[in-house]
Amino acid sequence: MIRTGEQYRASLNDGREIYISGERVTDPCNHPQFKPVIDIRARIYDMQHDATTQEQMTYQEDGERYAIGLRLPYEQKDWQDKRDAVDLVMHDIGGVVTRMGDETIGEMWSLWDGKDILNEIDPRFAANIERHIHEAIKFDPFHVSANTDPKGDRSKAPQDQDPDMLVHVVKETDAGIIIRGAKYETAAAYSNQAFLKPTIANWGDAKLSDYALGCIVKMNAPGVKHICRTGFAGRAPAADYPLSNTVDEIDTLMILDNVLVPWEDVLFYQHTRAASFIRATLHRYSAFPFVQRTLSYADLIIGAALWNVKQTGLEKQQAVQEKLSELAVWREGINAFLTASVATAQPSPNGLLMPNQSLLMSGRVHALTNLPRMMHLARELCGGQVCITPDAASFAAPDTKPWLDKYYTINETWIADDRRKLLGLGRDLLNSDYAGHRLTFQLFAQSPPFAQLAAVYRTFDWNGPLDFAHKAANLSDNVWGGNKPS
Image (tube, rainbow, N blue to C red; front, side, top):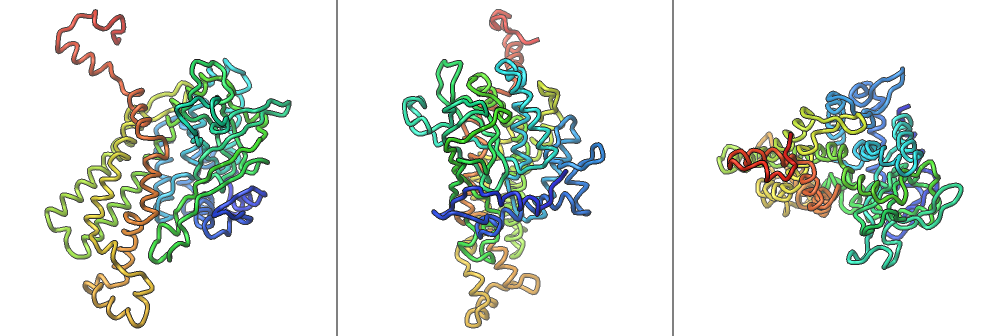
């Protein structure tokens, strides 16, 4: 049931309401700012059919092929297969994309792990989530995750200000619920559906709240409007900004203007316990492919920096080797956390295999808190020419080409044009508007830093260090207060 790239493109011509730079987009597949990233998602679909990549991108079951990224993980090999597929995609497209569906489907698995909680509310809800997970596997939609609300004044409860600052239910009908509000979501405008769930909300001691909502929203549903940020593609020539023009993922403020969500698409409603559960476990699975994307980003940073020092022979200098080693230690730390989280994976409450939670969440903090410093280190290694080199047009113009060829050619191996291309990659990766956007996106895409640290706090086994120190100090068992670990 795997889709082709053309089937995916056709699914976007469904009358959805998209705006960018104040204008209505009628053909997203051919819009200059949407086309590059839509082509990448289409390429991923086509890689599932390509004879040279199909085995790494899909698996077989009952005579059908399905996408590896959507496969439910039951054993370590399932995670390694997913990891191999992501690596294959990143190398194929020559950049890093994050919101491609394989990392957002895991948030649905997290909710499925809470089916006992859902059954407390309404047995239909647990059945709904299980059905949607299997339908995603079967029909291979581009599935994203609608998460962050505008929030408004955070010192106030949502009911004490404009109620639409957080998505909420305004009416129940026989057909389903009517919802209002807005969500930020990368890739929403060119996806098929989103798992909408609450952000961190202040509902106090309430057991029931119209803001405690989880559901599936179709991106072309009446009342759904996509107001997108202006993309980086087309701002400057692709020859000078290769990443900005190919792998920029468009972010959307998704307006929900009295949108009907059928009852079969409601995953939980009103129950704050279910909302709190999904907030605490949301990234139980999805953090793995997200952190892996940061590993790919690390490889791109290291590669750009290393080529820049190799072209002039600077890699032989000890000071340069030390900086490269710092980048390598950061990169290998990410790799180690990912590898170890699978090697010591844990069974989930619903029988899936989830990466070791303490290692995975710690790996995410390691990857992202060190990213700004590593980017700055790479800037040092690339040197000042990253920010002062003339554009590709100057390297081609008859009046300026001879001079640029003269001063940018190092030897017969490193001619001016290759050096220009490398410096252009470094500039776009580390110094451009896109680079700044990417840094902020990586830091906040799954949750703000304080929430990432909170995830470490919830998943780390504090009893081990406590027990060790307890024995070293020869404390009495009384200090455990009846909570001595077994």
